[in-house]
Length: 73
Length: 177
Image (tube, each protein chain N blue to C red):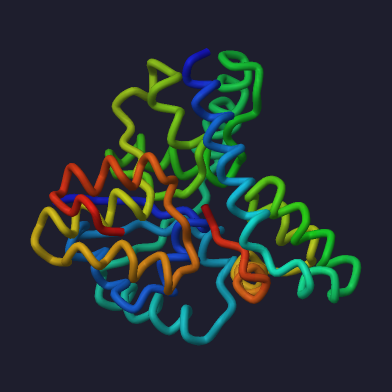
C-alpha cells in the first residue's frame, strides 16, 4: 500500500506540473479531436492512449505535446 | 556487456536530446521492441535509429507471442496486488523483454517503475528513466552536471523534484539542475 500511495502522490505532482506549464490558448485553438487528446494527456500523462485519441502515431503526438508546451513528467 | 530495452515514451523524448548518443556510453546494446519502431515517423528520428541499428548499437526485437502473454499476466498481477492498473501493455511488454534478457528497462512510466518493488517475481528487474541514464553518464565521466538541465530543455521533460534532488546529491551535482 505504501507503494500505491507513493505512485498516486507522484502521479498527482506530475499532473499539476503539466496543468501549470501547458499553453491553454494553443490547446483551445485546436480542432476537437486534438484538443481532447491533449486534455487527456494533461490529466494522465499517457502518451499511447492520447496518441490514439488524436489519431496519430506516438511520435506525431509527442510533437503536438511539445507545441502545446506540456512537459513530459 | 550492459543491455537495455527502450519503450516508446522513453525513446521519443530521448531522441530530441542533442547528446542522445550518450545512451551508448551507458549501454552496449539497446533493444527496441518492434512496436516501438512502428510509432516513429519523422525522418530525423528514423535516420538516427536506422544508423544505430546498422552500427549494432540498437537492435530490433520482434513482438513474441510468449512475451505478449506474459505481459498480459503481469498487468493482471499488478491489479490483483494493488487494485489499480498501474502498468499498460507497452510497458508490460518491455518489462517482460527486460526480464527475459536481463536488460535494464528504459521507460518514463511510473507504474513500470513500481513493478519490481511490488511483485516479488520481478524484484530482479531493473527499471530506469532518463534521469537514471543521465546520472550513470555523469558517474562514468561521460557527461557534466549540466546534462540534466540540457535534457529538460531539449526534450521538454520535467524530472520529479524529489527524485532529481536525490540523484543530484548522489552524483555530486547538488545545487544544480
